[in-house]
Length: 172
Length: 145
Image (cartoon, rainbow over the protein chains, first blue to last red):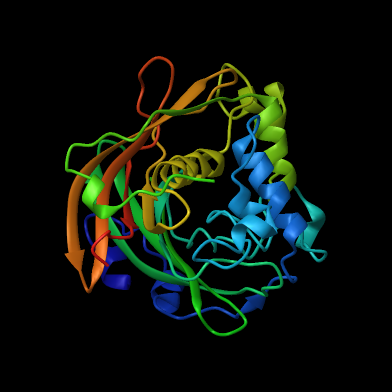
């Protein structure tokens, strides 16, 4: 990346980013998901209305194509880890991957695209791994801007894909 | 207990039924509790102002994303599969905002043996500001199948 650094415009892509591109990080596992975790999540995201029975009523859920309770698709099985470096505030580790590194003084969440496989069910143990997938550097109304795309993949205990998230972090 | 949407019932240009929530600490704190998302600027007005939001604390993008999924699920029913949802976060969710999920069907087609419905979606606030433009892909049952 020295070429870019010596050019007329300094690249915001760090050598660390170039090294990490495409390399999957270490896999991490969730605690087993419970029906109570799912019910509470559904209540929170439907508040103040009653959540649909597919998320909490086993008898009803058994009559659907899913054959049992499933979790809302935004359910995060990595919430509430016991071990958390620094014990600081902020979202739980493991769920969404890192911001990807790179230069720029300011960072914005540019959004995400999630592709879904099989649903999460009570008893599931979800594994997650992340990688820096790609980036794009261009001039925007914010000035020199770096769009960093991180990918996080969740699979269940049977190795089935649950979710693939590609998130975009904007540095400028 | 839910109404299921069939491929034959969907046409390009169809609108999602409006799905709304008034958002404030009652919804944000519940979401923080389940997602373990205790970020000061979502919990405290002073911290929100320190994060350059003059009105104080503000809502989570993750909760708006949940609303997109909820609106799609409530529209399509339990037999549908929500295959993909993507969005960008364009505006802040202020305390007391009434957020409404909107959506328009942009395409319906059979691909790889699946009956897929494509939508443009958004989360709009009470002033009409589009806070969360995005897209969705659903796989729905067919009466012919």
